[in-house]
Image 1 (tube, rainbow, N blue to C red):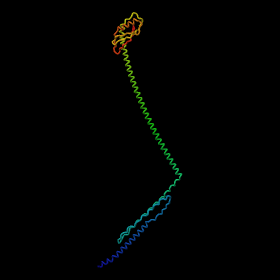
Image 2 (tube, rainbow, N blue to C red):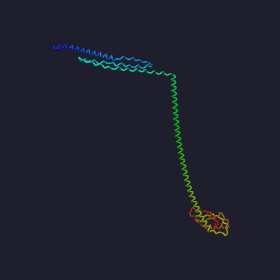
Image 3 (spheres, one colour):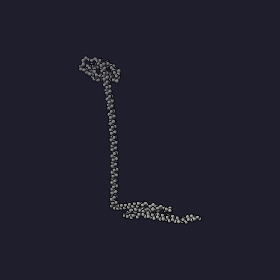
Image 4 (cartoon, rainbow, N blue to C red):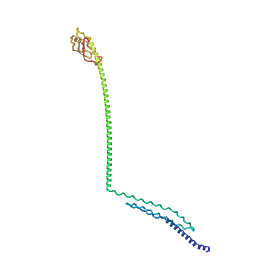
Length: 290
């Protein structure tokens, strides 16, 4: 074996021991720094005082300080390791606010208070029921009033309609009566006119008969006054005289006989201008000086 190879083998154990010693020293220094930093950050627990009441409040839960895990061991440093950086100081944790004491519970109600409350509740319910009943009664009265008013309006409307119908019927009846009266008066006027015309025509016909008979009368010698003789003359539609009767004597027998002879001599008598004017029995009056 050459000499320089033996020298190199002899130096290897010495460098190894130096590196091991340096690594141990660096680890010890890091461990010391870590211990001091942890002890500096640790804070003493703050004592907490609390007053207990019935029921006791729940005790506040104190959260434990978070555990700081040591970092994993660093790899073996090089022959000339750099010193570790100094840790930055961290601010101390803020103190937690003390919990407020719970208010004391209200004292238990006394028996008289319970009775008063029950009485007040019963009174309130009674008043509420009375109010509801009053409102229901008021609503019912209002409903009845509205129904009554509606019925009155309907009755008034029916009455007004009945009055209108009655007035219409009266008006129709009045118009019918007026029409009937007008027709009756018209018929009466027509009848009267016809009767007047008939009477006039009949009077004219009788005047013709009397004139013919008077032309055939031969008056006796002496007559006192203007006596009247009345005869009933029965004739046929052709005008032929079939009977002559003295109804009223003039008091002068000669004048009565002269008139009777003139009637028989005047047969047939003049006919009427209208056949419906014919009268079978005629009542004729005669005076010598008419």
